[in-house]
Amino acid sequence: MAFQFNFAIEDNESNESDAHREADLQLDPPKHKQTADAAAACSPRLGTAKHTGKDLSEKKLCFPAAREHHVPEDVSKVLENKVLETVSDLRCVKVAAVEMTRRGGTHGEDIVWKSVSAHSDLIPGVYEGGLKIWECTFDLLEYLAEAGVQFANKAVLDLGCGAGLLGIAALRGKAAQVHFQDYNSTVIDEITLPNVVANCVNDGNGTGGGDERKIVKPPSKKPRKAECLPDALSRCRFFSGEWSEVSRLLLSSSEPRSKYDVILTSETIYNPDYYGALHDTLSQLLDKNGRVYLASKVHYFGVGGGVYLFEKLVEERKVFTISTVKEIDKGLKRFVMEMAFKDSC
Image 1 (spheres, rainbow, N blue to C red):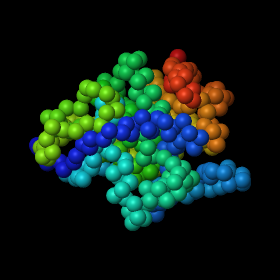
Image 2: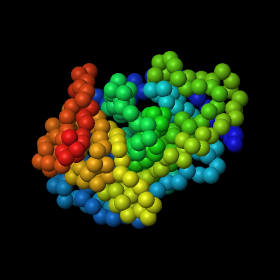
Image 3: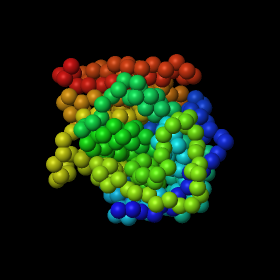
């Protein structure tokens, strides 16, 4: 069945993804994908605030209940009025356009308006950067390609997905199912889901070739008929909420499901306060023979997290092995780590 999509791919001389990379090297702490959602249903859990001078571990945030976001029957609505660009050979919603349309404090949880107003990628308990593609995502994409990590017939979780590029790469690799999780419901609805739909669409224009972060323009400005590939979308599910809550939702589901063969996650260990929840979620959702691929900076200034501190926690818990599979020395040192259950090695 064919659908008519009303979207544009914008031509822009500036390289926004490179700007994203440069911005990552600043001292502002990057996102933890667990951005808080101002939904009515929530549960109190230990959270953190930034630079308050108080004992951050004692501050309680009201986290939203986890929920699943369903793909609408009319998928043409997902990309309606969206502007797309090409990033790492994948189609992505142009975040600047989303910010322009959602400014003003009148849209749901208003994380865009609050972020713009605060001039910050981090508002603890409200917004923690889920709309931005952070640098280590590109590192992990490159490693997956270089190492030839296989996704065919596997169950994959993109944990703290943001734009969903890692999960989309797994989907392209013929994964049997790909689940996307981000703390923030706005990220799922406005960025992740549209990005997945955009990459499951055949509009006769192609997406490959050329500079991997070049913003391209189609030869014709007229809307093209786009055929949705239902098989790809049917293999995807989308969830928002705090990690522990999402894990509980998945494990309590009446629908039979196996655990994940591969869990992909990037820039999710910047804050030590979240390490326990992350470790528990990985141990609960990973298949006994599965692998976690985690990308991170060596250290996150201002909040104190980083690779070595997370490695220490993993070693103390004695559940997983953890090893470095890729090291990037450009700018602030970055790593790609592989984790597996100790009894599977």
